[in-house]
Length: 99
Image (cartoon, rainbow, N blue to C red; front, side, top):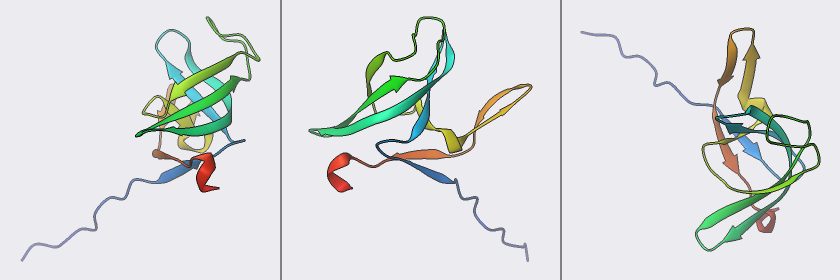
């Protein structure tokens, strides 16, 4: 009889207004941002963020509107090592109307 193993659980990290996050881009890598608002637009979530550090193609203080999705990560979900940045879990977005 084979032994049963416990299923792997992916950690979840929540992202709310005021939280720090990373916006993952191809050209600029992980751009640090602060969440200003998470707005429900029909079936989608729109996240308003402000860039917190200069990166190629992004200036500190610049405001961006992004769709909630796989390219926006809570800072607690990202681990940075000398070999690169790794996403350690899934980010769950909490809209402003649910706070």
